[in-house]
Length: 73
Image (cartoon, rainbow, N blue to C red; front, side, top):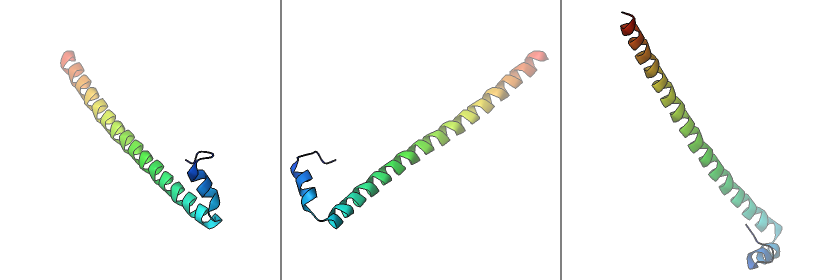
């Protein structure tokens, strides 16, 4: 991020519009890639969490069912 009055900020305004547009596009692309990577990590986490939760729930239900059946006999 450019700080107001910094040498980088002054250099940014001294360049042509096409150079600035290319830099903004490049930085935007990098930001979008970072956001996409973050979202894929979050998506993978929730998929794994959900899968583990479902497996654990099924095991819990099966154990409860078998315990209830053996107690009923």
